[in-house]
Amino acid sequence: MAVAHERPSICLADGASTGIIGQIDFVTFRERVLAEQPSFEVEQDYFDWELAVTAVMDMEDEIKRLRRVASPP
Image 1 (tube, rainbow, N blue to C red):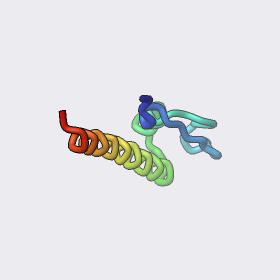
Image 2: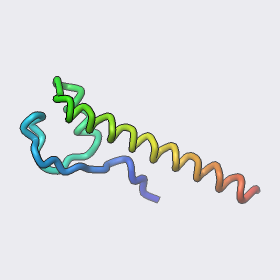
Image 3: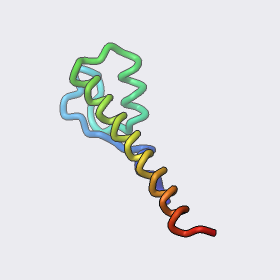
Image 4: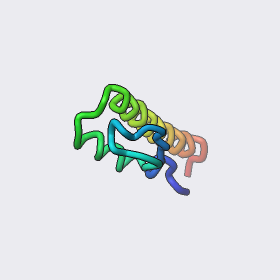
């Protein structure tokens, strides 16, 4: 099964503040944000996206745990 959070992308309407225009994946966005002094809005987007990625990973872990509990060996 493909993991949805590995390479999600975002379409940025105005990339002027970051030099980022178009659609990029989270890893690229993160590298660019960490390499510069982002605007408040770009930094907030980064934290929102990071929170969403982390939440997806947590949910996947919980689903795996529930499957193990639901179907013992």
